[in-house]
Length: 238
Image (cartoon, rainbow, N blue to C red; front, side, top):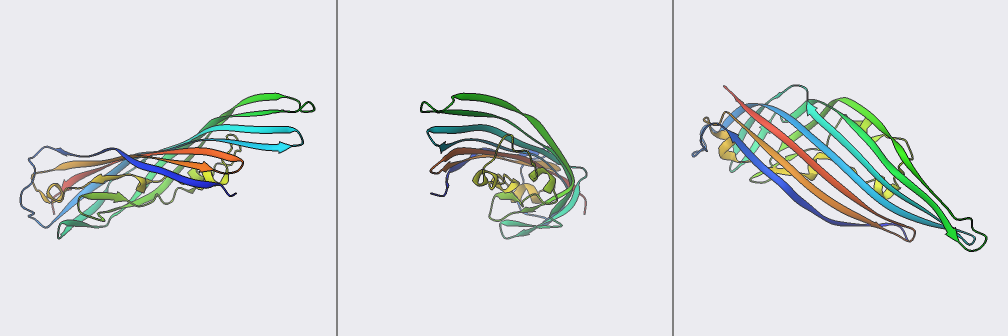
């Protein structure tokens, strides 16, 4: 049986919009505003799995625990125009570029064998050396897909942080295919804050967690993904 994924759910751990100075806005005037926008964030993927393989009267078992984490931030702000469209916001120049960051992958593996009389019982644990990757020139973009929600596009220009080659810790295909990315988290977006002249700065934070189980004839595993990001809007005269 091919391994089956079972998504256990996405949990919004924290989603907040924080206004710095100024009172909350009332009327949506003006109908557009210009900002310097910056982003910082952390992507984390942790996995465990157990695989049992039988050879003769010996059962060989592999157990692994792995962690992949990326920290990222914009190296310079992006000028973005926000335009009111009904109760939603359309972002002009919504692509945030100049994103840089670093990724780290580490974990442990335990290999054991047990079974009948002719099977040599063994058990060996290995601490995997940490691998690191860095990137520059990454990008994402802002969107307000529905009222009150800020969402980011998948991280582009950062292939190096997806290309760890070490087999320690091992990452079976179904687990490797789970690509933790920025859209997993979303945050609240107030059109009133966006359009209010007396709100010079505010930030939006998205923080979410998701668990996925992998079930199969010989492989069982679990993947936990956590995504947290903060987008800061600083108002400009226009």
